[in-house]
Length: 406
Image 1 (cartoon, rainbow, N blue to C red):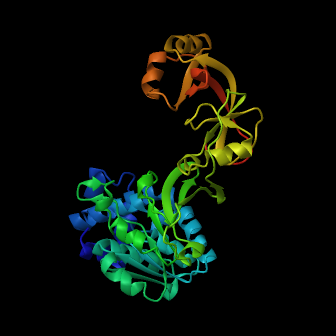
Image 2 (image 1 turned 45 degrees about the horizontal axis):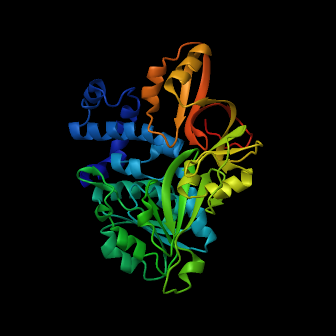
Image 3 (image 1 turned 60 degrees about the vertical axis):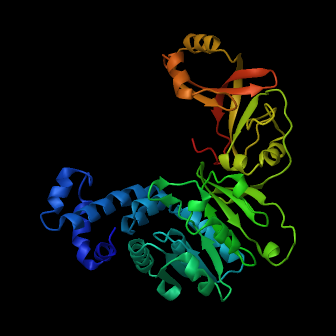
């Protein structure tokens, strides 16, 4: 977006256009564009209609406040969900932070949470138009002088902005002109630069949920965040106890899973033992799997894995936990398409959920071949076990923990 257009979009002059665009049932339609162009230029009409569409998409991340925020498509995609940003801000407050520099603020989702938590925030955004939107979002929140947006290069500005000992938050842009990138050398600001800023100061780097383990530097802590059952980010943290101690050999990352809302945490631990499939099956939250906390979870459930390296746990007792979805195992079938098809036919199964780990199976393709028909529904779990590959017929159990998102 052109910066001048962005300034118009956040001004009082654009309010009537935004109001008219908000009344359009389909802001992407030709009819909506035609209606808006009666009063505004084609460029202005496109801007407000795009904004309305983005606000509607933003409801899933921000709730009702999204109706008054300004977005770009890329910034909305990368923006932190409101509850996750509030959790992060609370960790900064608990660490005794009073001021934070947000490098790569996008439309200001995390900056808003920091400021709402009472922290002074300087938010840096390289793209001029996005910086205009971020400033409007922070200004509309009535947070006073506690939040400021600076348009500029994070690498060039970091030294000056962090000179007084402020904490740092970095959300590196993971997009290039060609689209989303997983090449760490394409991150902006650069990955090595971002991690270096956490040496000797409190801070956090937000990364993608699938951030490769090879990118986890020693001396930092790694947290995988699950929000309402969705794995949404990997964040790297420096800590007061680590940053205050100079060690010639930094410790490997300490790993943990965090479930939101609720802020339940589970640290990594030893590997879980394996054993025979029992009555109860547990599917760990993806944050638990990524944090390598399966063994810790197994201890709390008095459970074991169904096969080494497979992230399904099983046990003799049903234990409520927010960190896994529980299933009751009713039958154990050989992993044979012919056997499974016959079972599905004989039990008049029309709705078939298929879960797979450790086997080269595409659930949607297999479901078509099984030809489910009938009034009944069932969940099948296909997995290696100590007795070979099996199809487990299971029933999802609600344990009352409030953790089952399904």
